[in-house]
Length: 372
Length: 241
Ligand SMILES: Nc1ncnc2c1ncn2[C@@H]1O[C@H](COP(=O)(O)OP(=O)(O)OP(=O)(O)O)[C@@H](O)[C@H]1O
Ligand SMILES: [Mg+2]
Image (cartoon, rainbow over all chains, first blue to last red; front, top):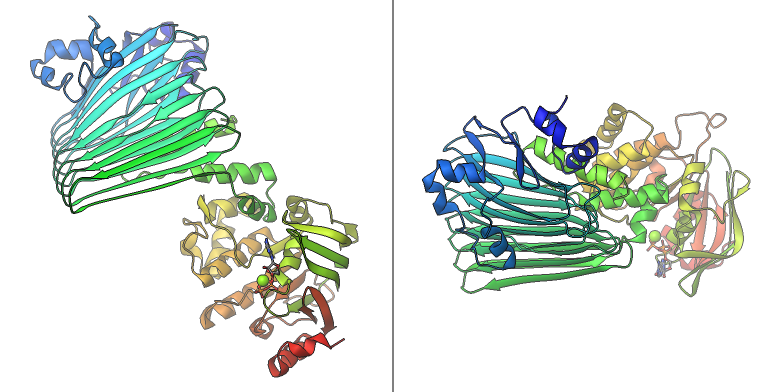
């Protein structure tokens, strides 16, 4: 299907291909459920549909006074140089997605942020799921092939998951070898709320650094972070996630699968159990396929009786025994290895709609087929 | 089909097998017996070609061709298959996905095989992850059914299998070895390691071999050797020849 006028003139075929590697299907752009931003220009923004509103942040802030309460709230303006830079922008770029009370949408909203020049791209997103709403977002971040030194992405995202609401946010990165990426995001999860945050990056990048934090403020709230990453040579990925368990019954799970092909991965994680009756688990598995670094720093911190926290970390290579097992079944060494790696990367995320899970799977598949 | 000549095998810096000689003609199934730690699994692993097992002397011929230097994959492609005594767990790889990757058969046929060995419920599970002892054996036999090798090595197929499933296993293994076919038409051969001999109730063995301390001490009738072991223990085998 041809792209809309706006998109066709702004995005080349190559751009569209890069964007699709980040899990975004631009032929679906005619639907309300897609947001496309190139550099700081909004090329396409959705509308109200099925109780979901997708708006450029600047327009949304003009339309809704109440939104100010959510703006620079869970992520503080002066957190660091990145947030300060984004906060200093006169014309903020980014999107606001609001899932109205009780709305249920299992079809993922697509949010595409594309970097087309050697400059810093700034983005500020606000995502709100009102009481009882279900919202799924696939956020594809990509850059044009030609973008090199100086190209950077500073992205702030604030998530508000209200009582009984469920939000999944799946971010797939397709950057380039010289691009620096600094997402800054945090979320507040209220009673019975569920927040699923997934991150996939299997393409080269110069540096990614992020440490999203979930504040589980409501009773029985749930946060689940899953990351599947591959560091190519010269890539540095400093990744982590943090869950602060502040209410009874709150639970969090932080899962990482990391492969290095020569790059550096720092896999941090921090679960903080502040009240009794909370649970947290951290798991990092790393494979070193070519000499590189995987540095896992799991932290669990309990400050009361009755919080149960655990972690599990393992870094190594593929067991020869496993490869030989599959070879004995008739697979070549290459196919056996690829089959085991594909299994290693297969993190099934409980609570994701099937369509979204298969979108994630195919993004991983295609990256893997392309030799990462 | 298979011929092992004067084979010495080293594991690490220790010689585990010494001067092994074995011949298994087309259509025949042989049984390998012997005490724990004597080198039976080592022999099967060496025939399969696993890296930890270094042949320091001798040759392995498969259908007259020297395969001593071939990779595991090449041997599998030639038609050699192995049921592991203790297969590894592969996290994230579904049994069904593995079967799809190793099979030339349709998904329906694969499912039918799985049902045959009571493994229909396991296709969505990670390979060997949390499988019980008996489930591992059934999963192994299922993988072999799908792979359909011509020379089948089974490492203690009956151990850990309950009374009900043992006949299921027996039937499946009989199928693998084409035991329903007349000996004249039967092409498949097998080498089965057993301690109990239960498997002999389902599969007629043409011959038995007795291994002690890394060497085959005697060749003969499988049931007779088993009877000897039952009556006199392994001590006797040292002398038999
Ligand atoms: N990979 C290995 N590393 C170290 N030692 C090994 C290895 N494989 C086999 N061995 C040793 O070689 C000897 C023979 O082992 P093997 O597994 O072949 O015995 P087996 O006859 O199959 O015994 P069982 O009846 O208990 O299965 C044992 O002493 C064992 O510890
Ligand atoms: Mg053994």
